[in-house]
Amino acid sequence: MASGWRIEFSEISSGWFEASFQTASWVVAAESDACSLVTDWERYYEAYPTDANRKQLAVANNNCGIEYADKGQWNTAERYLLKAKSLDPENPMFKRSLANVIAHRAQEAFDANEFRLAQADYEKALRYDPDNSQIKMALSEVLYRVESRTDRVRDYANDGAQDLNGGKFREKIDQYGREMMIERKTHEEKFRNWILRFQEGLPEVETAKIFDLLEDISYRIGEDLQYWIKRPVVVVLTDEASFKAIHTGPRWAGALNDGRIKVPITGVSWEDQSFKRILAHEYTHSVIEDLANRRFVPFWFEEGVAQYEELKVAGEDPGDSKHFFEVSRARRDGSLLLIRDLSTRDIAERLTPGQVQLAYQESLAFVLYLVENFRFYTLTSFLREIRSGKNLEEAVTTGIGRNLDFLEEDWKSWLGWKWNVELQTPISSS
Ligand SMILES: [Zn+2]
Image 1 (tube, rainbow, N blue to C red):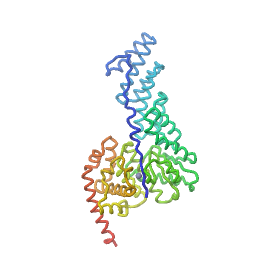
Image 2: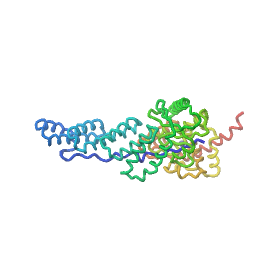
Image 3: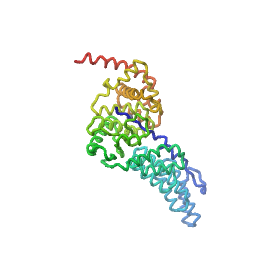
């Protein structure tokens, strides 16, 4: 069974650049006209070109830049700050402001899934403020996605974590270290936006076929979710032992997507349907990650939609009763898991080994219920609501059109109806 685990990065990658900008104190002005002072000081400096006036003009430019930054106009802000820096290269504050502004712009690019732009801006920001730990951490997050090697990722994360709450990142930095060890025995190949990293010694990897498969998968899943990933997608294929070393998800994870798609492939043939299904499943997580801007998406949605797409790509009917034997059993003995519980952040860690399959099957059943009763597009509406920062309750109500309590109850009776129909099918069909 294809199963996977997605690690959440939202806590780490958002909200880092919320620190308010400082306004230099030399020029006292009402906030609203910080920019009009630039013209005043330009004239004044032209008439009296002293060092002190040059520095004042620099400060005026800085403050005007900050005013634009406060409005989120990063490009204009950058222009004024560059002017300030060129007028007074000694003032370290201008460089820090520049770094801050450019990092904000990088974060916007990251949120818009423009990973290359985000990378370029974070690197630029670091040149102005080489000791900024938050920028280093953010850059490591982007690099993890745009490169299939982990050296630079680890270096930036390790550096950045020193000044931040280092312990919080320790586990992740250790994982990066293990990835680097495994990468010594791997090759990389690229095709369009795919970056494939695979291990030596695996059965001969036919990369052209895998790229074909990925192209086909992304095209078909894109049709449903109306989204085709344009940014780099890293796919790592390893043997089972290496896979175990580089994943931090639950023990039962069969493959995972933590910003990179990681699949253990020992014993799987390239033409094998199960390989195609695993890739389709994990790629769906990448699409959801982009569409939700890396915000938290509930387990039932992640796993329900990923299984729905994986089955469709494999040419199977997601509604076939054979995918729901655990749900059927749980309905009989009253042990169905609540959809509300499948919406909590830590549910994957809390599932007992006996509940994992049920949780997956229920997620698929719930998504199927939503597709059949509310149409597929309500699922993408739900994601848009999540992306806009709504909480689960609001996102369900606005995106799907009913609240979660209603849907949970209605889904349970739908299951009964669905099952009766399914149970009769073998009898009535010829
Ligand atoms: Zn999954």
